[in-house]
Length: 188
Image 1 (cartoon, rainbow, N blue to C red):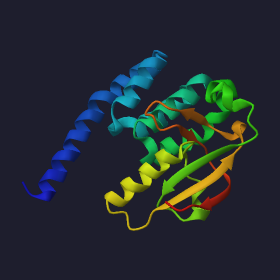
Image 2 (spheres, one colour; image 1 turned 135 degrees about the vertical axis):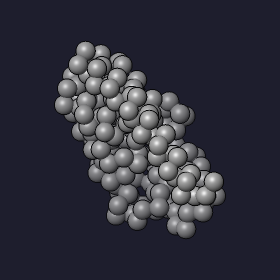
Image 3 (tube, rainbow, N blue to C red; image 1 turned 45 degrees about the vertical axis):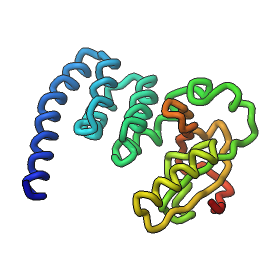
Image 4 (cartoon, helix red, strand yellow; image 1 turned 180 degrees about the vertical axis):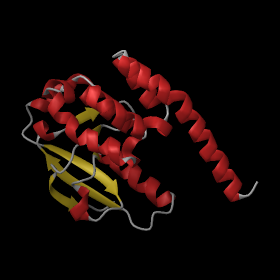
């Protein structure tokens, strides 16, 4: 099978998933079954962006926080629509729901990022981590997969500016947008 045929086959498979899942998503929105909406959106990246854009206006506020952040952690980083709704998510959940209790009273939190973007763009990247070891792992991974340029950044953020903190994948991930200060490149 040549490359073009393989690409066509992949596109057909994606279209089948979309045709199968989108009607279920529409039905779940009509029934206000928000758990089912979340399940369907995070089940397949093939409907995530379009499905989230469809469902978002109908979501109760609490789900305008949880669903976009769950989509983001399930492969939504590469989807502008998902990133758009993640940037808005902070206003739909109190700080106690967004970050661990021990972080709330901190003046600022040191965070790290491995990325290919130049330093002036790093503050607009959503994913950072509180673990230098995890940032170094992402740095090494990027080099392993042939990234021509990779940077390791350190910055600080105030707790109330964090969109969400999650350690579901042992990444100690801090989601933020435009709130990291004092960014500097550090050596690996």
